[in-house]
Amino acid sequence: MNTDDTTVNANTKTTTIKPKKCCICGPVKNCGPYLDRIFSNIEKIGELFDDYVIIMYCDKSNDNTLEKIIEYGKTNRRLMYHVNKQKVSPFRTHRIAKARNFCINKIRRDHSDFDFFIMMDCDDVNCKTVYPEVLGKYLHRDDWDALSFQTFPKYYDIWALSIKPYNFSYNHFENNVVFYDIIQHHVTKLLNMLKPGELLPCISAFNGFAIYRIGRFRNCYYDGRVRFNLLPKNKLVEHQRAANSLMVFKDYGNVNGLFEDCEHRAFHLMGINKNNAKIRISPEILFR
Image 1: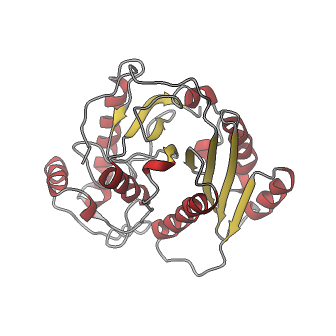
Image 2 (image 1 turned 60 degrees about the vertical axis):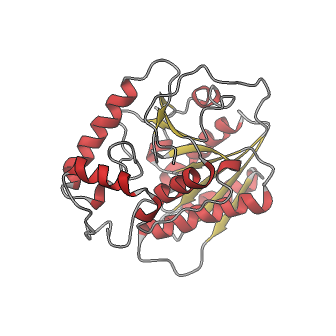
């Protein structure tokens, strides 16, 4: 399992060929206030590629999310959207995993020749000003297979993050609120220590937006269940020691630790275990 903690420098192989095709994906639910800016940002990111499509999975919303998507689809034929009418799981991470898996299965069926896919959240995190050139500089580098970015003013997505020695979910150990802050400080310190051009290796990271090489994740899927069996035992023990706690399975109200974990962790671990995928974080900020 490739979970080393050495940084990756910019002295990597590059190519002058412009990336050809990318699928930009996202689940949407109650995202109405953000969608105008989200669509604008997607279009700016799409200009980095010769061709791109947009795939959205819509769960039942209490606002005008679906109406906005329908209207946008009338003017942009790149958009494909699916409206879920099936019974949803009581567990949020299971619902989101289903949405993300719909998107990647659509890619596998209809866009298997594409080079990249982007998974992004369509909320306030990504409706800020986007700087596509930040993403563009990494598209020709070969030192990553999944790449996410720092966010302003802080790195926020500790739920999806697995990085030494905090290799699993912070919610599955005691004092999760305290360790949210500890891990946030830890990853921020590591990112700030990087030299120009370096990337931070990790086991899992999302932070609201990530780009993937399709070939490294063809046989992977999102899973919102607790999948500690995907992580080597020594990595779980390392986290137990760092947290000074055995694993716990609490119901926090918004998250039921007995049944739920962040869906990104299983996806990234499958990429590592099956394809030796390189999961990396850039210290640069894409949305500010």
